[in-house]
Image 1 (tube, helix red, strand yellow):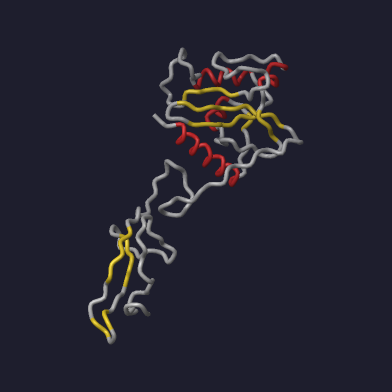
Image 2 (cartoon, one colour; image 1 turned 90 degrees about the vertical axis):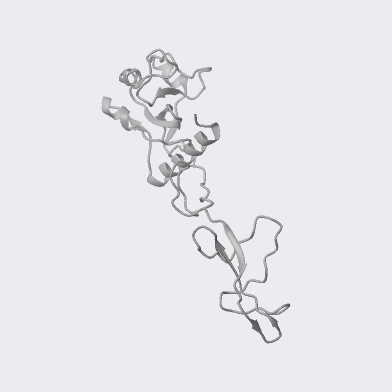
Length: 218
């Protein structure tokens, strides 16, 4: 089962991707459209706003049995089964139940707000020319590959384990030669120039491979 933190990370990354790709809530006109609702997370494009229950109630439109409703000014969201194995009596609407509801509701846009292991949370949206929208959260690069990707996407880069060694093999005038090189113990890649050990270890004076450092001087 996914943790709340993982679900939030997935949503935040989907929001960033949606903003980058210019996605917006989907208006449902055919049953097949319900299977292609975009994942926007908390991102809301300008010209749209999340619908509240009062928007739906004013038009006399029905409320599904699992509506996440407390007050009329709450944002209108629906929990929907995404596994395909949900039962009509479970808390989440089956896809067929959600499609039946959409047939009775017109004039709204729809987007996925959250995605869990077995359910999704779908939100309704209203076109509003004056709505400023909501920016997507800024993503943080991966600690290992330094790229931006989703929390469930496989990172193919090595999870480096750095080790520093002295590769000097002789004596030069004035003292012992030292040539320190930090490499990954897994793939052999040399550490970047700005690498800093995580513990209290103080690295030696940085010297490029092939150069010689004497005690107390370079």
